[in-house]
Amino acid sequence: EKQYGSMCGQHCLNNLLQGPYFQPQDLAVIANELDDAERKLVGGELGKSNNVDDSGNFSIQVLKEALMKSYNLNLSQDVSTLESTMERLNNFQDDNIEGKDVGFVCNLREHWFAIRSIRGKLWNLNSMEQRPQKIGLFYLSAYIGQLRAEGYSIFVVDGDIPAPITSLDIGNRSDWFVIGVDDKKPLEEVKTVDQPKDTAFMTEDEQLQAALQASLEGSSSGTKANVSASSPDVISIEESCENAEDEELQRALALSMKDS
Image (cartoon, rainbow, N blue to C red):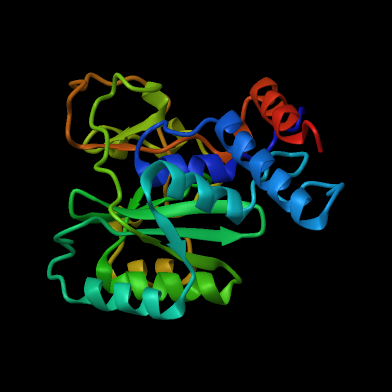
């Protein structure tokens, strides 16, 4: 079977922003610019790029630069920022987040995924999983703690995250998860990488255990549904990192490697 490149960084950013904002070539341009800047600092040849590898994995510097340049958003790994964000979330009742949206970017080696609030609810938007999964604020601390214990780096999104796009006319239908439609389908009808347990029917104790095991679900359905194009109850979530188009990936990598 043909192996495709990993584009988790791109999917993570688009899931965080809730729209198809970044393409591989956009991030490749940024990687090339960072390589040029690093090359000037060392006064000559840089050698192998530190900002994108041969399979399409982009560095945290690329993701940070993309968010800052385009949306004035910063990815902060400062522990005090994480603690203050968690403290703010703990003040809300009934899992309803008020005020500006909250977002996290989680990274372990080559895998990136986003967690963000959408219309007051917190969602795990891991493109390697089956469905976007709503995360109760009570379980968030346990889930974040488990991710950190497993070696994940947790970045807090600092700034005003753009409001989610609500039109299904943008992008592909398979890039949208429609609440009330896609969450009612059997898991085998959804694009899948593995088969974690659906937490929708768990007791509170089971949900906590699922959080501690870092098995919260997320992904998108590729089947059509009769849904209004302006439905507010939609979530944008891109495909698994393993499904990047090879031709598009190679064009992006060629661009990022030029002049290096």
